[in-house]
Image (cartoon, rainbow, N blue to C red; front, side, top):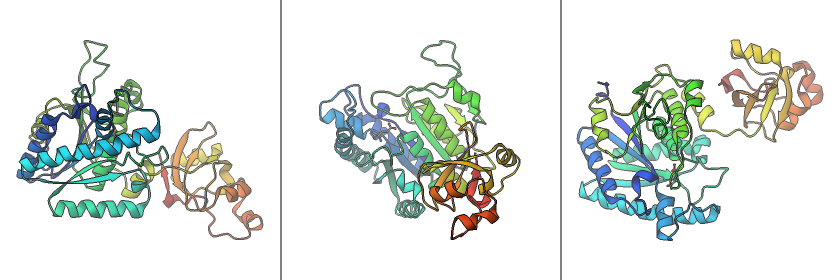
Length: 371
Ligand code: GLU
């Protein structure tokens, strides 16, 4: 048995392959089933958030397409069309159980810009107060590479900490994570519980994106990293039984549980690592890299050997070692141009090079997170 009796808020993610039939038409019984199970959860006093895919697939169906379009604008048009169909189905199904659903569409920017993340949090809080079930998808109609999250496993794991969920359930087309690919090996065993996401685990999983969805096991492991480091338990289980949700809450051992990291990291560090894209990077010399591996210290120009990308003061940048390995991320006090001029110099020498000196640290230790 697992102990989920104190769970008060759950984020559930369902992928396109679970929501559409082979011909990409909508699978209404699944949608109704989701709402029925949500009703049961709500009756038990548990709040739910749904992260749903299916917009692009349904749009493809409406336009009579069988292959995912590669042209961005066409994909976006499919999403605009399909998202409306998707919500229509959820809305109708919710009425059967006297539930209210509301749609939220987001892109990466809504997490990256802290002010926008706050607006998102406030809206979601109010929806809980008004007993409206948030149904969230990426805003695929406007998503382009620079601003998209990219897949809904990751999106769900970014939503879970924002709504302070206790549990994230990712429905998949398999029972959970296996020790080897179950499609290739008959003796593959389902892993019940994972308490640490190791390099070995990362290299074990192979991607298995489908024609309709984006997520494979790799995106699920990424999602697990994001959720568990924000102290949210995560389970991957099979969508062929939507009532798995209730059984999971009741403690049944279903699917693969990724145990939350009890210590976790601060909300700000979590945001910096997982919700922000870097605008460039600085490369540090061995001495400073060694120092950082022992203790978090501020980065001064002396230890910087190179800078890549173009960015302004206040930007989020990566910190790399000489081999290009990313070792930290932080908020810079200098622009890329300024860093290029002062790299390798002592703090005292900065001033003669730059005629203004706001701060002496390139990245202050408080604005730095070691990965
Ligand atoms: N947001 C996409 C859609 O609704 C799906 C992304 C995914 O499959 O993870 O079609």
